[in-house]
Image (cartoon, rainbow, N blue to C red):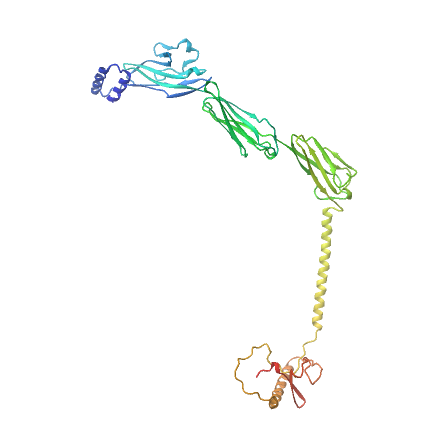
Length: 476
């Protein structure tokens, strides 16, 4: 603590080095006492041209010291000049040349803040706040005052009108005029344009900044808003100016009124022509492209009205033409007048569908009955006992083996006749167990259900019976 107080005293009274030793020695023997003072000011203050600025000065004085006086001084090329003095006993003193613009905000032993009104460029410089205490003497701190200039901000429209589909054009220019320091200027938008900045130096160190926004006009952006944004230390917040784009374009036309259900005899129908244009549309006209305009049709308030029931010859192609200062636009619509309404056509189709369904169902039932009757009248299959049903020809042949020489078929005739007799008796027994069947009449010399050549059948007669053997289906 002794070293800290000594440092303060050295700053306050540098011309008494001998006294420093005495105070240090005294504090060494009296550690409970605290001496010192401090002046706190901002190192730099920005003052806005034409407005008021506050120069803050806070005084920190120990309890065992007494404030005798606080003052403000300014450094000029000719030397230091006193601006204002505050004395707790004698009050406030301000020179006449500053009395109109300068005052203490709330003078006290701990506050020496002053307010300087209507700041000008002449107020730029160094200001010092001094505090005198007893017994330590003077303490001071200095601040630098700079004057900044708030820009004048405005938006200027481009020199040429914005025409839909035209070349790239300057939409608008954002201007921050005579700012100190130069302002930060930009455009906010979601359009695909470009920004170009230009800066120009003015008097008293001020600068004018201009930012041009260039864009190719399109009718789809009509009424869109772009925003000029300016940032500057003299502004408490960003300065924003919206600008609405005005794009001129030829009319966009929409024809209303035709619902696709115009039929002969329908009444109170009309075609409405709606146009979106900038500048507003001034010329409307209705024409028919495929013939003369029918009688009983009139144009009322830009709409084509049919003043009578619809007729078949009202079908055709109609055009609405609309014009403004930019150009001419048109819209065609094809009208078809049917014999009956869609509701009536739907009802007729439903009835026709029901009749066709009934006819189809009746046809299917008739076919089913005919098929059923024909199946019942069909004759049952016939059987014969004169044909030996040998294995079918599609059976795979047996593996090849060495066979003995073939025995002549004539030597096997008694064996075949005996086999045929046994087979016939077995067949008669099976047929007796079932319903009697009809035997087809035919040539007893050959099977009734085959017409094969003599080469395809081998015949053998045993008494009154004949046995037919198909050699193609005979396997041994």
